[in-house]
Length: 104
Image 1: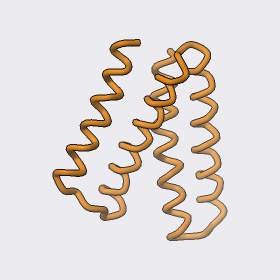
Image 2: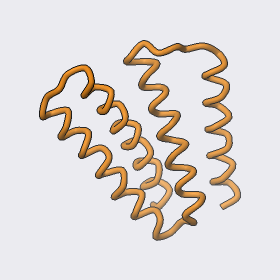
Image 3: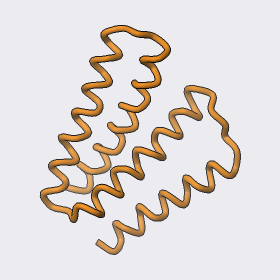
Image 4: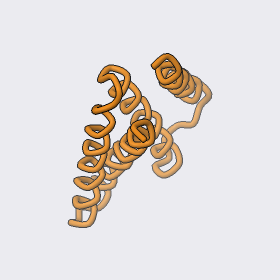
């Protein structure tokens, strides 16, 4: 359950980052509420996961999912570059995150 919570926390962090970008596009109260909800929920789930997982592993996993998720959202929804080098480096991040899970 802790790993599921950690994955959800990482996805919510990526959502929060997307809402920061959306706030630059349209400044309204709904976006602010979604931004705060995304990051707040992310920290709540991260806090739960930290009860059961080592802090270094959990933080690296959470950050890695957030980075890759934010990059994918940027590429899909905001027209950011989709070149092979970006995708290769995202694969390296995911590989490192999966490696941390395997040794924990």
